[in-house]
Length: 197
Image 1 (cartoon, rainbow, N blue to C red):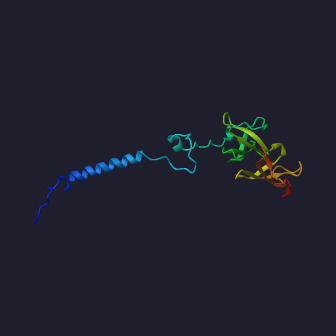
Image 2 (image 1 turned 90 degrees about the vertical axis):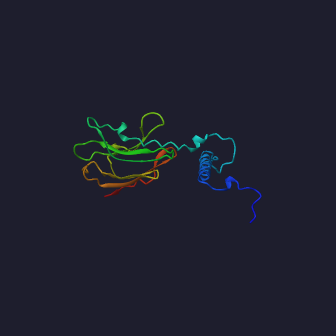
Image 3 (image 1 turned 180 degrees about the vertical axis):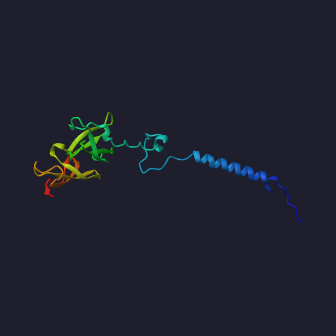
């Protein structure tokens, strides 16, 4: 039997302390690599960076909530009684990324069917919410049903009266209405042709 020329080295024999030292070194490398990550890749061309790493990872601010109709004074003369919000719906009507509220409002009445008004409410960047458009004026003596806001379009069914002799309980005209923001104003895009009920 031939003996090697070099005596056995102590580090060639695996002992538990060696495994422990190797595991500790590996854990240190993994932990350090978690903190030393490169910037995220983007499709944009490289150039001067205008944001910090903290800002790049920060979530976008949440959009402001749609205005609450209870915080608005409507252009509606109800005398000694209060206004009542019959229905409301929200949506981004003008494409600015902020939600508006559309409210169907009438004077609170003890009996009968008071006429409705349809109002668009917005929340400016500073200040209180306010009414910016009247789509249906209560003076037109209409009642609103089938009211909705979808994809920036306001739709409603308007019930009306062919004459002052028709009792307020029993509308005899029905009209489908649709409004959409176009050219800086709410344009009624459905023909105003009424039909008898």
